Image: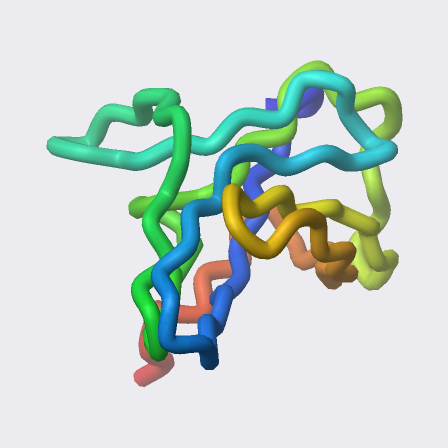
Length: 110
């Protein structure tokens, strides 16, 4: 949809304590939600667990960040600044590269 976008990345926790991603913020949207996809349906969640010495994978068709009511549509090749907010470790700013809406890194080319 032209006024929405998904955010995909992997969060790596190298510490011995689990944490939770509680929300995200970005300058491209004031309405940023955490979503999971289950049985083909997206639903908003309050947080995602990040296990100690583990990873939280945010990807198409699964857990992801949803940017709603975009203030502007970012261009392919641009980078978008996103701040991830964690329950224990606070805020972390990351930069996400903008890919085409059809981009799916899990698809294998034949």
